[in-house]
Length: 170
Length: 299
Image (tube, rainbow over all chains, first blue to last red; front, side):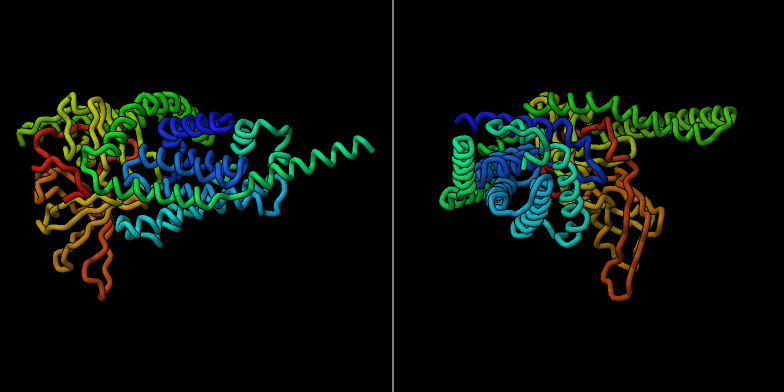
């Protein structure tokens, strides 16, 4: 319960920032997904269970503040959050490389999975074009943001460990 | 030795915690996936007045103050960026008089633009009057939260008379259609959205087609016969077919026409006259939108 509270607050703050700040941080039409960054950080900090649960809640929030169908992002973030948690526990990488690698892989996977879900739901006919115009740019953008935001997010979401440097975070 | 033993024990404990933390729970994962699928199904099966739709409307209403605050907070930063960009230009000039001359020319251009804009707004108001349309002015208070989404949030809602499906215009022409309404605000799907489709006719040739948005940005005119293909500069107007948008609203101008011999229809790129990414004020046409009042992907 103690860990659920800061996680819930982090997701709520991320949702508020997603509505208020993220649209103004768009680069060439690519809007950063701050909720996704929190989900992956939670997955890295607490493992697959926290990643899955926060992915579901965060994805549902992201669906609800958007304009498309409600549910697909909840599905995608659940799977990606869980997988990111598993990946972090089994990945051999040190220092900044771990979070950056996980965010890059998770972001690309989430974008591709969401694209597939849209195709299955009959809501997208431009999947291949979206890979170049949306998916890869989003993954790159999230990776850059992860370098900047992860140390601070992890510090807040994982207070049980002394973290003095970026290297020690991972 | 005791110190080393304690450290080793602590390391083992940390490893155990990490192992527990890294352990997955497949049943939980499956439950969450099923829950997400149930939510998606519910969204499709429930009507516009279902609980999930209601929840979204509530969240849109609740998020408006944050969207407004975000716009307010980021405005100075955007202004500083513009100022710095302008400063760089002036520095590169190195001639004060030339810079002043340039500034004056810019002012003149701005005044000209304001004059033209005034004329366009007047034309828009006249258009609304001639079509006997009732319009409501709205300010853009929020923008899309997703890269795939092309929508805006405006500060007028059902309490002002705005309804789902109402067309939205600006000084340069068509902007989009209302897709969600709360008492105080409304979400507008822009014509640049990939799900948007507007029935149009080419002003010069009167041929009919569909203007669609895309994630990439430019609008595409589809389903126009090769023999009646427009040329660069042709103006596109709403056709009025389908009953969603009133007839004769400017949608944009043709900027490129490409056609291969094997293509059934030419690839026609269209540019809106509205600076949709930076639009700040709009007019909602109330009471003249879709007959059903339901928003859709277009016409």
